[in-house]
Image (cartoon, rainbow over all chains, first blue to last red; front, top):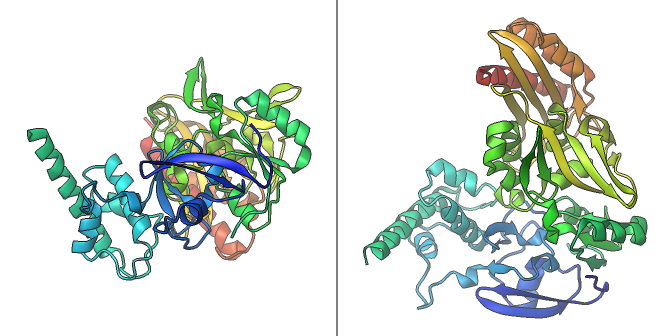
Length: 170
Length: 287
């Protein structure tokens, strides 16, 4: 299929909701999320695929949405920080753990950190501290020195493991 | 930063992609993972009028064995290289090299085909492919052909890829079972290109080195196959003197540019260290 240079239609599922819009083909996924959908959780940080502030989950992979065209995500499943809370409105264990362990100061990197940590914990449910540090190596935080972020991810892994044990027992 | 305007194309097959690329001419570019091209488009270092997205062509994905050849589809991501059991068994240097490329998010989108086809001297896989003597499968309007990785690179961003051609797959014969391997890369931080890097594979019979291959990354305008360095190892027992001699031979052929990673002399010196370490680690892994 071929579009023209000014308009094309894209459709994808974002946080469980099917969305569609007319966009320019050059629209980056981060701008589609922020400007077309009003989801301003994912941040534009460095805009050069280094800092990870724009990280979202795309079809089960962590991606930097500043370096993906929205057109490439046609038909995909996207998860942003806005889709992390539980259906009853309670915080996701990662959000809860970042809150409890003070895993942020200014908060700019936090949506990307949490989305990256979400995928990391899907892939490594019981990560070591070192695995977490490598796992979030594509996400920069200029406030915390990462200590409390790592603590929060470790704590979230424990909380999620506890939930799974409870589910298994029920 | 927002890239310039372009028309977006999403072919369903390699043939359709080649037809598009041929008919749209030189202002059309194939889009693989986009993690080199999109940043270049943001900076206006690339301004294609047409992007041909290869992302939905199923035939460009996957890793398989066919006779003696291991075939890696061009759209296979670096993360998929790392996760491949077949490669872990047959050519583990690929996983080791992919693991030091960029960061987890970039590896989940960036592809091996894009990495080798772009011709960026900073990319890691071209040197690894030269070390393994891989061949690239190219598809164009007049059919398909294979070009050896060792012949593919002409200058920075200039390759043997012709107009209207797409790199569709990488083919390699796995090094002998029990071979030793290593990819050693010094970089300033996660996500950086190499100050210098070296890929080594070798085989031992007892303590004698029976074959060796060495290639160098980001120390010239193209990857370099260090033929003389490898020759100095063959027939010897990989003692310190032999390893030093190989490192000297590798340093002699490199021609790094001075940049934010350091002056030429420093980068050449680092290259020597990378070659030494890679040989030592490959030796320790050989059976």
